[in-house]
Image (cartoon, rainbow, N blue to C red; front, side, top):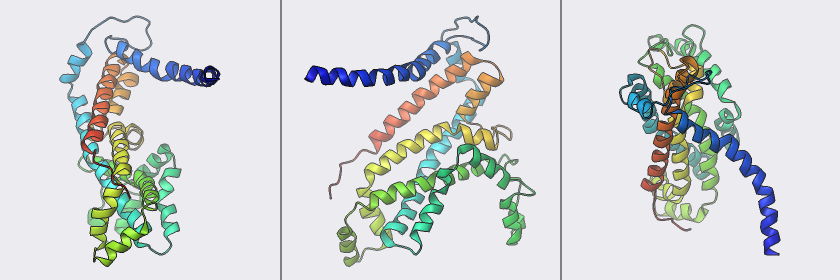
Length: 293
């Protein structure tokens, strides 16, 4: 009977595992191989260059510029998104506001849109003449704050970062709200009787009890920050003056723009280890004893 169950499970798992191995694992392994060559992508010929591509990375200022931007995203995006998500979720689920269901729909709405739609939408909103952002600023008398948001190297990166926070925070409002709904109301009632304010309740009760959820959110947002390819490519394509360039876009342009697939694969392999390191470090640094309730 036990042997039959195992055979039954293997029969159903094997096709899925085979498809995953062919279309996911195999390309990863091939990327390691291609990263040690000078393959141009379309030619069947290539030469083995060993660690030459990785040595070139160390002196590539464009790669380090893109990696710096990913580092800033890694430092800002998870913190801003989680803080805003916790704040809005606590307002909706703990303290209660009128029309809470409507606010949840509004917050979650960006998740319904594809990345392509979000990118095109905000690119038009940031337009210097007909965009909604400058139009709103002019309407409220703040003409001095209008600018070419995506054409100014000093603000373009932060404009894209704002879009990334906006597009992600709604999901975490719903995620944290669902987690908060499982916390017994008696805990908040006892804190209220003890004179705890909203800030104290959030920091001393809600955050510790939601730490496992926050930890998962942190890892996911860290991976989003290390990618950031789609939005950047649609909104700015790395410009102006490479001020919004990220590693994912640098890899894409190197491969499909310059036909340097070997060097692009080296960039991908480097980012594979960076992402893996960040994920492991995040899980270890945010580990703490689980609180039961």
